[in-house]
Each structure stands twice: as structure tokens, then as C-alpha cells.
Length: 350
Ligand code: F6P
Image (tube, rainbow, N blue to C red; front, side, top):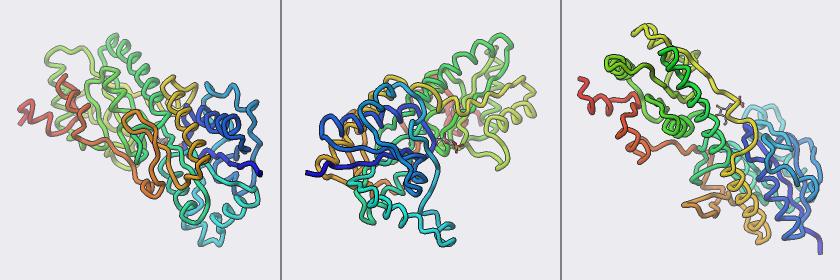
């Protein structure tokens, strides 16, 4: 009987844990279900160019702790309108190559954009399974994505370090963290790192509240303040989030301020234990779905249980931080300011 043959690709921004997910899918498929596995290079670009490697138990051993992705990634968007206008029908090339490679299923590891492409390919007849991945934690339909815990740990350690230099110089230290349009990394690392002011896109800030909050802290002789800023907060187009807030403080209050943009450090290096476990659970479950011919699904975690939802339900929308999230309410109770009018009312600022 012909062995099932599955292709794995990794697309979008890299994140700690991708290799753990690849290993989870491949080892389970090979050892448990006697399937064949190929690893497709550079996301959808590799499928378009038919660039791949055979994955064996031997070459997925030892990758659990590796950051990045052994397959490489790209931000190729096959359904991008512009390219279709240029008469490059990449989706059709992908479907042709899927059959020429004799695949029985395509496993796509990626974020919202990847799930959107996976959903379209599924609707157009391919057997597809999505595995949600991003440090941003903003994939719709799952409580968490691997990459997020590692990024929060990296950002938290950076914030811990900023406390000592802020205190030594009695400065305001601003750290800008990633998250695209979502504030999950800023929120979690801000709380874990003892941030005083946390600015996220989901809670619109008021400049006067920020200024009053910092002036108040100075008046009660707080030697320094730590401000955690998500890169996606409201700001003038050409400005970087952290620099914009620093300029506001310097211009209006004259306080000595420094900015750290954590950037790609949040995406690099070995995954945390939590991410290794989540990625392995996702990968194994993906192989189980394939063994049962249950396609058109995105693997997910809900209340600590691994399950799946139809890819059609993801449709590329983002999971943003609910402004009334319990974690935000708790942070407010310990005096964290989110720069909004709710803080102002609380402190009777007007
Ligand atoms: O999606 C993950 C992410 O790191 C975002 O947080 C960030 O805004 C974006 O990728 C950066 O994109 P690129 O890697 O293409 O510069």
C-alpha cells in the first residue's frame, strides 16, 4: 500500500519553536504512521520552485532546541492580487507542484497570513493542515502560538536589565517590543518585568495622561520609570513607537530618557521549554489529523487542550488583546498605567 506522503513548509516571520514543530510532525508521521515526509524550502516560494529535502528520523533529530527553521522561510503571498495581474498564477503552480510531488497533505507552519493562504488552498482542493506560529501570539482561533513564550522571556530579561541602568542614572527607560498590530508581548513582558507604563495598540493612550503619570511619579521621588511600548501603537507613520514616546517626554517634561528597540532578538535563539512542548504537541496532533484524513484544519490549543478548528474560521484575522482582559484589570490594581483615560479617572486627574 502506498505510504502517505506529506510536505511541510514554514512561512512568515521565524520564531523559536518552528524546528520543534517540524520534528513533532515528522517523527510522529514516520515512526507512528509510517508516512513519507518532505521539507519544503522557504515557505510557499519553495513549493512554487519545487525545492525540498526528504525528512528522515535522522535529520529531524537534534533540531528540537534549534532556533529559526531548518527549512528557511519567506513572506511569499501566492494570492497577492498584483502578481495574478502580472499573469503569474502562483496558486495554480502550487497546486500543480503539490500533485507532481505526489503529496497527500501539505502542512503549513505560519501566522495569520499563512493560515489565510492555507485556507484558500484547502478550499481549492488541496489537503492542508495549518500549525499556528508567531511570537506575536495574534493568530485567531488558538489561545497561544509557540514563539510567544520565548519572546516574552527574552523581553522580560531585557526589562529586568533596564531597571538597573535606569536606577543608576535616574532615567526613564523605554523598551519597544514586537507584536505587529497586537500588544501581547508588551503586555505580558511589561507585567513580568515590572513595567510602570505599558502602551499597547488595543488601548488608545492619551499623551497628557502619560505626562501626568510620569510627573506624578517624579513628584513622589520615584527615581526612574520603565515604559514598555508595543511597536504597533498609534504614532505618526514615519516615527518608531519608542522614539516617538521618548520625544514626547523630552519635549514636554525634559526628563532624561533612553530607548531600546529589542527587535529581532525576540525572534532568535533556542525556544523556551514551554514553546518546545507546545510546538511538539501541535506537530504530533497535526500528524494524527493526517492519519485520520481530517484535513482543512488548523491545530490549536484551547484551555490547555490541543484540538483543531476549520481553517476557514481563521480567515487571516488577528487575535488582539481584549481591552478589558482580566490580566489588564489586575495590572491596573497594582498601579500599572496604560496611558488611557481609565487611569486618569481612577487618579481623578481631571
Ligand atoms: O510577525 C512577527 C514579527 O516579528 C512582527 O512582530 C514584526 O512586526 C514583523 O514580524 C517584522 O517583519 P520582518 O521579519 O519581515 O521584518
